[in-house]
Length: 484
Image (cartoon, rainbow, N blue to C red; front, side):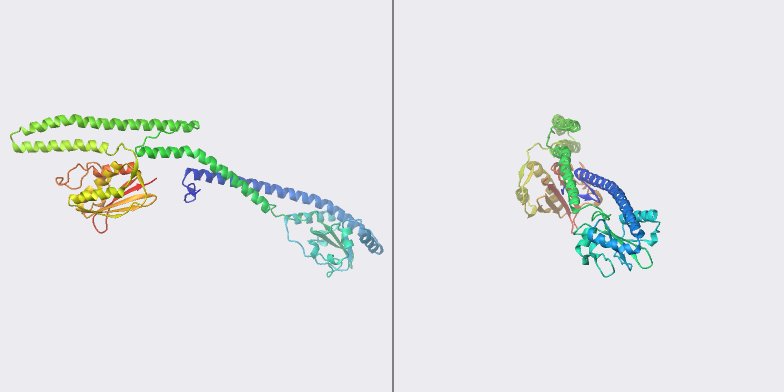
């Protein structure tokens, strides 16, 4: 995944990474939207269900309250004792001489819906104003009955079993307290339908979240496979373009979707036409060079017959310049596109041989570093590339120091001379063909094509040549040859 996601800000740089990025955002956005719609629908359904159940419970509670308040005072306790002994109602009912404090549950949307339905039913059936009725919710373990010192758990088990009907009790209990005279409170408790009846929090359990996460990971896994399949033709195209830029003609397979086949066919046709043009150009320059050799030779022979020595020498110099220009033009075409196979090249050994050759000419080349990993390239082209760079260094600086730096990613060759260097505003200009910065050409034969040819060879290997003036004097040339 590292090559997919190389963030530039928040966006990945690769096409694969961006497609996966958009796919992931789309999946997450779809999950959020669907989750929000489902959550809103769940809340509406939950509130509707709670209101319907609460409405039926409220009417039964109101009927029970109406029944007890209609009994004469002397019969109320008798009826309550019979209910405790025999059951017959879903409500736990007592007559208390004090108001019992209830540790109410936290407020919520569903709790408020229950309170609204109960107040509405009691007011409609009994005419009791909401402020006279005290309604609260409590958990069974914390519920006080009869008085503020007695818990429900302290009562005989049969009392709760016959009235609340559930044991163990693990659901919220609704408690209603209503004053029926100046000395007594009617206390009524009833169970909610289930433990989550008043729970308005999200029903997303850890298991559901894990399921959503697995679904997202599954979609992303298939997305990676699909994106790799879709982007592979682009990778093949980029690889073929790079190889063609390095002098290798590699036709793309014309298969796959219509768009891929059309792009491959267009690229194959383009590189065929370019290769044909390069071949025609090479043949053209070779033909021009061959055809010009004969008239130049005839002119040189005729020049030797001139009696005026000054005219003869001037004529000969012009012919030599013309001959050098023809050879230089042909060299600039042929030597930047050498038709040879790529093999493993020992650049360190190549540099040692160049140092030995320079020593025979009484020139000094110092070497440092080593080649640690194999490098695959065109040996003759690389020899011409490095040879041109060393020739320039030895001509302008008398001696040269060469440092070879190697790594698994790239191989770097630093060549520093002891010459005057090059003005910063002309560092790029010297790579142009037929460019020389010294006015006197007599001591250094050539037409100013060496750096241009070297850079073209380096770029044909996927590399580059750069120049910079060293802080301690002289010019430093860096040849970068990547291995990919």
